[in-house]
Image (cartoon, rainbow, N blue to C red; front, side):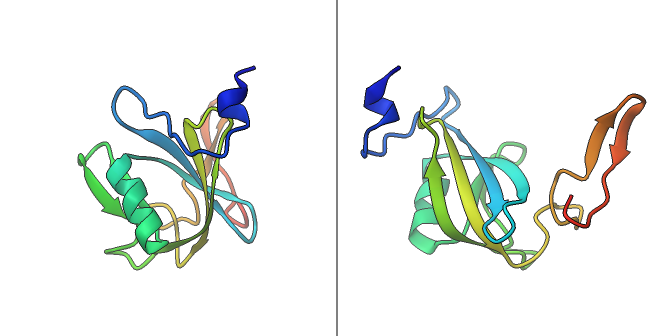
Length: 124
């Protein structure tokens, strides 16, 4: 056990070789996982400054303010840090769907015996 990371009160994020850290986003009220994204230092700083989720888009290679164009802003209630400080858990109040497809969350399919199968969206 590496107690220096596991028990410290000092925030020292462990960025990946690409300068990113994984961010798992959950609905603060329901606990439902909404999405998984990545943050760089600028995205984390913008999130902390505004209390709204910002991410790093790996596909567009740019800072992304979640909901800036769709209106589906994610107000950050709390950020938790895992024991290794290489993953963040963003607890948010979403103002709309988390998925770019318009779904409540990005996890609307499950892996079945014959490939991907839809999951009902009641709380998917």
